Length: 281
Ligand SMILES: [Zn+2]
Ligand SMILES: [Zn+2]
Image (cartoon, rainbow, N blue to C red; front, side, top):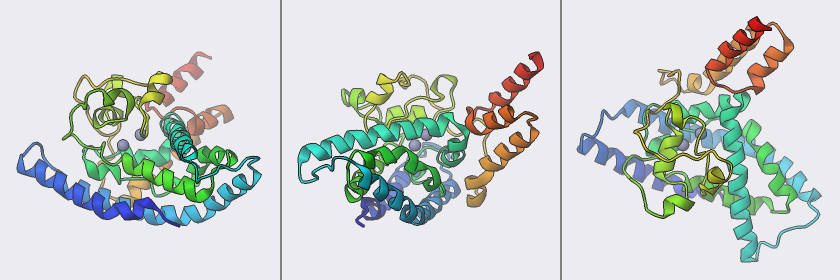
């Protein structure tokens, strides 16, 4: 199947190199080369894992499409326009759950655990998120969009999100109102108090404005995760959050406590709050 991401890979490579050159030349900051290479290798591996999981999840999608009462005519432009918005809407919720539910965060943390912010971070993606991410896209199959059209649109959505991972682009005028931009996405990667769990958008920032998760970039973001991972080990980067979760599950005495560890918010304070509540109870 035609996957636009495969076509985009060499362009991503060139842009990552160009941005690195500009940052190093202007001596803007300590450029972490090792982190950048780690991001790139994680990116290649995530494409390979994505293909593997895609083989299975495509079958689930095809099953959903068979059940769709109406099939979309993909020779009509309006069908593509609807697909653009539907796919981006599904991305918003997938992304929001990936931050607000620990089970999904365990995958997505990979993307946030670099404490740099540059184009290479865009390709630092979870190897195993294919296990869960189809859940959010299955409704698109039920709406009658064929797999090939979904794959193209979904690929284009992810390609769009590449360029917003940079500090080199400031605010871009009225487009900030409609689109997800480098400024909005810097906020998303920030661990500043006000920036946590904000700006989940893929292409259109309107979803965040609509569901009240939007915040403007006012202060310089601090990048990374609340508890830094401090590792370049790709396997550890992809798995550490699972170990932490299982450790927390083991420590909980009640079933409710255990379930909360898996399906509750992933914030570090969560466990402490829970302990305090259970002491009071
Ligand atoms: Zn995120
Ligand atoms: Zn990002």
